[in-house]
Image (tube, rainbow, N blue to C red; front, side, top):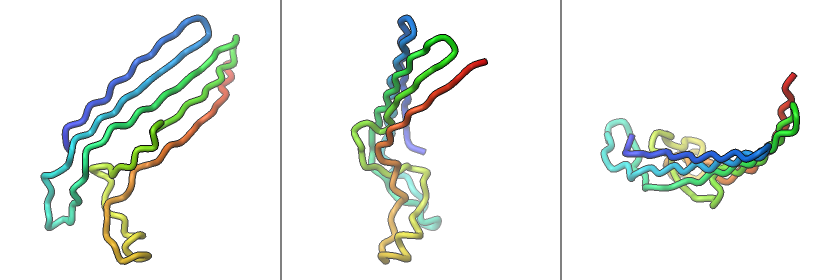
Length: 107
């Protein structure tokens, strides 16, 4: 695993909660060719989340990989499905942007 850093910042005021997470991963250039390990480039991901609490109900809205960065996770392995479909062996792509919503009820 190359060098990586994860930073998070949370803020609460009244019933409003906000969270921002930044993940930065360096280039993976030390690989074992006998194990078919891929080289991967460096990348940065930004995740954001907003939540609002009303009594015992918490509403959440968030976005992971906010800027939809294309990346390959250093420990993600090789995409054998792509090899069979296209004949190209490449690392497994990382997850794209996702928007998530949730409701939590405490009782």
